[in-house]
Image (tube, rainbow, N blue to C red; front, top):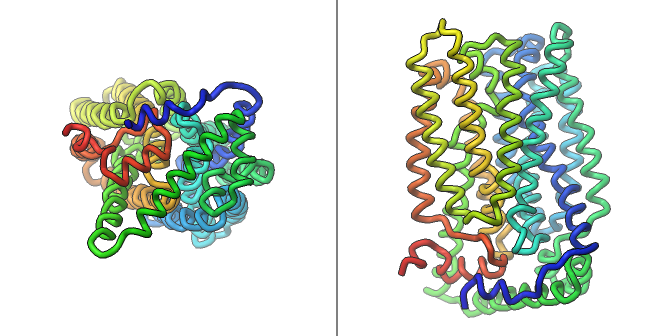
Length: 480
């Protein structure tokens, strides 16, 4: 029986109080995404004033920016395992406190060392949230709307980045001549941290995690709050069958067979790493972190760049909204392959315009801004939401949080490397060389995705799990 047909044997999803409650839980949990977005985006406008006040050179700027990404890699890797041990909800509550104290450390930082410490704390929380919140949402969501529900987290991420860009532009243009203006930019992010902490105290744990640790009654009780009674009982039974089959496989595995068991995990983990690292290699965070530097390189003044930088943030939100509409209509593979192909196309256009338009051409900054906005729109519509949804879907329950954590770790490590390297690359080869490099890499990733990325739309997590373990979910298996 196919994954699609098996998933469709579950009772209809239906609507009612349970659907509204699921929406409320998703809204609260995605405050983690909002914090993720704000804390990564705020550096875009805070970097110049904090550099002047604290006497930071380009190396210090790179470490203040990159420290968050490297710490996020550690947070993603560690929090995956922590959430397997203590639960998704408990882990998110802990992350909210780290968000709060990390922001305070940045606000009151007297020097670069304390600032990097605060950014490191924020990075641990950002990375943890990037690994745990999508898994929490995916495990709560019914398969029919899993993509759009899980994808709300990425919408909140880009919403947080846009909020940071707007706050930066307002504060920078109104009070930019005052010392400490960047501290207020960081202070804003304490508010959603408090909201996340208070909200998560009132939401339930993931029913799939509860089942995995043997708390069946609690799992059924939670499931009945977010599904109709008939659907809840059917889903619980399906999850239990999958867990029993997995346990049988593990108990029977010995000698040569155990290598096969490890083999399926290595294979899907490599796909997850490709998905996580590939997202960063689009160059999206060269715009989200260094957008003002890029726009100044394009020809804008500093004050104009602060305002113009809102345009990519706005299109990122609109692209994510469109992506949520497409997630249950367009196959994941089509979204991803189209995304890498289109970003490569716009990379070439940006590089070409930068090379062909002279620096004194008045139209140059505006043409480059339009092309950058198109690149961000293509990336956010096709890749950003789908990347995090796919990573939360790929892995079997027993290793889901750990697999998601390792995949997110690969993305954050790549993010950190690019955060440190991009200012140097931009200074050495300019916009033209930078974006030609991104274009070549994105074409290669599109080909790798075509050969290796499984399709996960429209099937239950339990069916994805069975397909991963027997290999039937991969493109090569479907062609035979």
